[in-house]
Length: 146
Image (cartoon, rainbow, N blue to C red; front, side, top):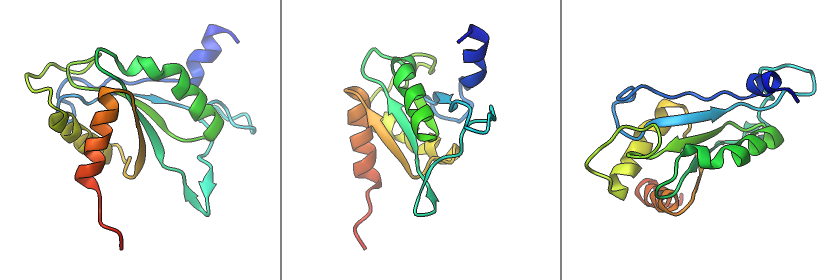
């Protein structure tokens, strides 16, 4: 595969500082490989009983960045057709600096970012600090069973 072909299959975005009103909102979106019809727009998400599968969001660990998950994110997007994003936590990677780096603040960043991107519900996968952030978000957003 030539470099130009690879570039046309994946793209990433970086939001300007403060674009979503909260630190820690820098993310990359991984597009899927061309589908069997040859379209380069990306494959349609596979569905389970008529519903599209939720997006997958990767959260990196301490001293890491969204690029830590690039290869696994690309592979997951290609194999499943899901939307896959990698997110920089506040004070990491392309995200702006903030004096508050608590798990509560990082959870609030995600609670602001995910709905704005249409990613509720989604699957959160976190390593180390990202895992703790995902667990806190789940505890804060959990709903009692019906």
